[in-house]
Length: 386
Image 1 (spheres, rainbow, N blue to C red):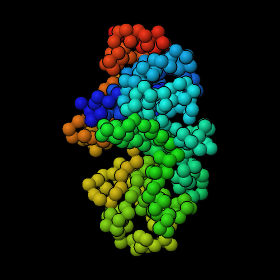
Image 2: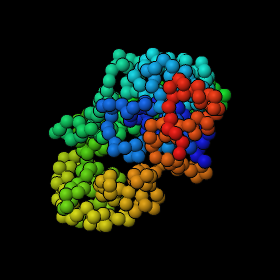
Image 3: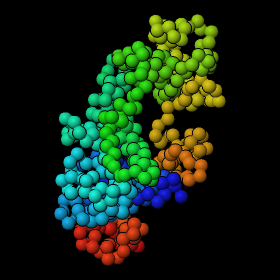
Image 4: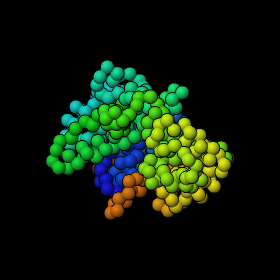
């Protein structure tokens, strides 16, 4: 039984951060029921080859409902009345126009935690504008620090806005609001905005900036590739090794294992000598393959690790020892995290097809056959049970 066992989450179909946040809750044992559209949305987000490859959709059950139909509102409100949490990722005002906003939901269920996931937030001049991860982290200030000095900012995949600053922030807010309810508090709205979550992830940089220890020019700081001992280097076979030898004792080991301890190099923190250090490090790493360097640095504290591809990472001994990756329905994917000693998280099932296992979910949520039939008449759909 997961740490959130017994918590019912009603998720409205979306892309990106909302599903990721719901996945975290499902992994921790929450019973997540997703309201899917009757037909797949067109031109919405990246495509996966079938639902089983939708990793962030794992652990759910599904019903279908066309929210554009007036009678569907009552079915959705019935589900909200039995839920502990609602997660939606529409533009601000959309749920209100449908009659499913927080006011209507909390009137039915005063203890409900109503999680709202957007890019810009529920208020402000940009609230109703479209956007994607890159736009949100651009306006947060974070994107400006990512990339090489002689080029444009580099998209850090969509991990900073959508997932770290979005879905994970949403999940944290939901769990905190649930804790408040269980202590006798009221239900409430959790307004999670990716632009603010991205800014939160950059908190340490604002601290460094305020203390005079951060330059706004890229590649001129410790953590942005500006220092030769915090960067990645190409190897003989065209792959890369990551170097993070910040502390002096780790840096000393780096020099030793690169064969440069007695090379008369400039001091570690001599900025004028950094171009020389970078040149010598680059030349050294080019003399061996990535795997050869991995063996050389294995077991030491130089803070050097191979840069693995997505397909390579699950096979690394560290991941194998901890079971950090699992295979579900033929899809290799990250295992649930963090780990709980007494209430371990699990992956209940792969992402459902539209309406899959929906009838069983309705019964588990306490709807009797009469109520299920009424909801079906209001447009709620589910696949026939096997």
